[in-house]
Image (cartoon, rainbow, N blue to C red; front, side, top):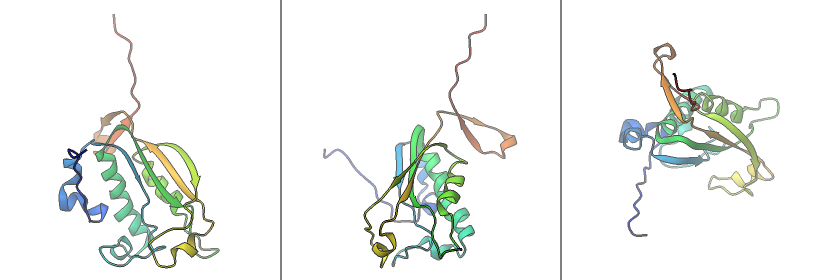
Length: 173
């Protein structure tokens, strides 16, 4: 269909609003977001702006990259839409594993209702140097979440918007 158009943004997701006013342009626009976010510093790519270069520690990365990315997705998804991401369960040397999947899930659950977890295997492909060896036989977590259907904003919540399940109230006499 020649009437379809697409725009591509080659910017860090946490910078899309600052640089392109993305969530205003695409407020409640998308039905689904499905992606494989970076694994902080597990796979290092060359060129462009990389999140592991912008945030020096894992904690800074979670709050500076992941939380703003999830917030952006929340603003751009329609009520009832699906938010999902694929991430390895944990990574690092034995005894010093980073629970990246649980950490990212916890932040995402601040914005979305958790639906389910699926375990998948990609077969070890990646553009990062040495990634196929790192991923051999690796199962990854696919987290599937939903944006609630209705919203409620409260000053008690610090100005955050919370989405609640839709309810039907009985008619009053």
